[in-house]
Length: 396
Image (cartoon, rainbow, N blue to C red; front, side, top):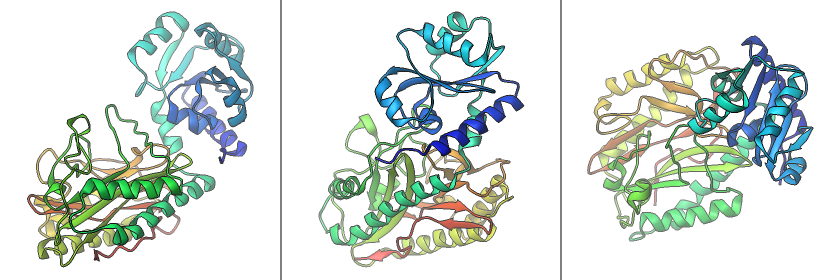
């Protein structure tokens, strides 16, 4: 088990304290698991108290022993009641704070009510979710190592498909085979999303017309799944020769995610989808030519959509029915919907160290998907794909 280095945690705490000071926030309380992992190195049931200056305190309900073993944060205080949390905030701040920052984008109303009415009735509670996400969107050298390790599992999966894919096997069977390979390679099979009710699974294996089945998720493709309880992903339909099989995988290594889509076909694929696949490859080439530090995300989005219109694919680009998703790329890290988004009307500029998954896809009803997705790292010279599997449409 590879722990988050103490130096990483120290740098992250320092960045948070700097942002707190700049925004006039006296202290932060971090509660959500993704943020806890990022700032402490553990997801034990805890509250992280970070004053704008001074030492943070980790207030742990369960388990104190594991928190002490995994996190460099000291002190670690056992929490038997919420009174310990209130005292920890007072002690960390050296007195009564005026403002306390919390993650209002993910905090349940009941928890906010407890904080605002009982524990911190004399303080102003303010939202710091935006500044936390801004800190997290630029990756360190250590984080990039984790992201590259996750990408290596994605490469293994893509290279395994030609040996596994056979006529008559179901999407579900191929999905299960690939999940087994990924788990043995270190993918722990759990994916964190920040958006409310956004759920994610390991892989979408979608063949032929199943590729055009939409789902409730904010994604260009969905698939039928095997139950209405999770209406997405592989179904029980048998894969036929001549159908493009979209293999869209999400894997994680030590907390960090990689997103990849590759396409396969048993025998010659439909000409229309071959043409669509050539278009999505051209979309990646266009993005590589434009994306570099300082590029505005909303302008990149418009450039890719303009390419789709000029090539005659706008009708099926990023969905085959309205409403369509309003992004072509999403950030990745400890969550699969981090900043930046290359999306409609976004004003964020790309910065070196940002990481995002670019997923141009053509979805044609009754035919299927042609899509190619890479996870890209923004460097000083442009963008670099972390995914090394072939980008060719693989004919088996």
